[in-house]
Image 1 (cartoon, rainbow, N blue to C red):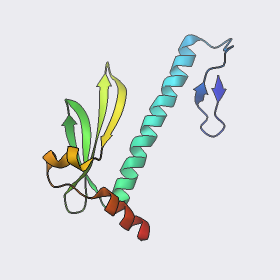
Image 2: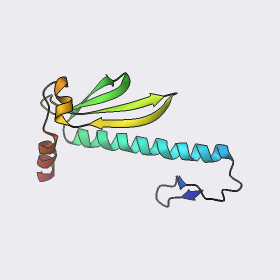
Image 3: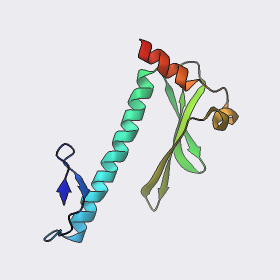
Length: 119
């Protein structure tokens, strides 16, 4: 197994992964995926909080999700996690105002980000 020097987790398998049990390899690869998912969610939540957004837990197409609302309560984006067999299959995000309009007033996320950069 090759370990990324900064991440300390496997990024690919060696062609000659001798001595490594299949279970060890699978656990290491799953750990890498879980860490990546956690970092994505944590980073998104941190940025949303820094921008003054609030969150609302929702279900999106029967899957768990979260709606990000700006300071005025307008919808900025929606993120959902597709789960099957107890495992995360995909994380999806929607920021397209046309696709969010049916949820209520929509925030101009680009404007919010521009204003945040100017501060």
